[in-house]
Length: 197
Image (cartoon, rainbow, N blue to C red; front, side, top):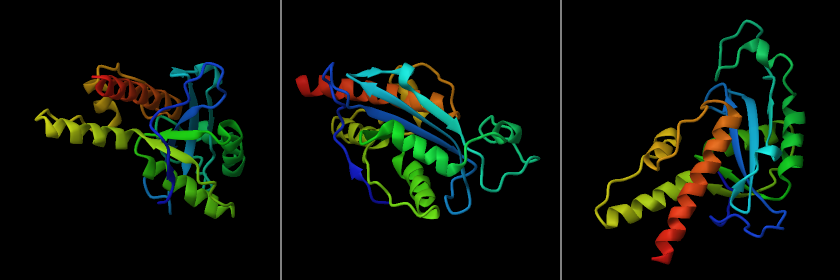
């Protein structure tokens, strides 16, 4: 997967309109060739603050909707019946985030689904700048290995717990987007403290 990696720091000016958008997708599985996005959420970080009042999310009706299908990520088929069409959800997502950098946990999975959706509907991939908390954790672990410290786990919930962050509403797009934003803030605050020493 190709995407532009962004700097790890979000815009910091109080009057700065630029944001880093924490994005999370919930899918019916992990293979973008056969599985579908069923929910997406975007939560902005501006000036190192999570702006929940500007958060956006939507459910997406799968292309092969089955009214009697199974539950996925606490969503019943009836919950998806009035979901947005994938094209409309994609348009809304890009309208919300604009040209700002995107933040993911394990970016390659979510970006893989977004790229396949773009291809499926004949749209060019916009090549957003991307920050991945998984990259930040791996970088932190390289430093910890050098000084003989134990490694931080890479899974979102476990990494948060290791950094003292509380449990969250997992496996729903909005909850996981907020959780990713909080993890990024914790990681970058610790990195800044490490640089200042």
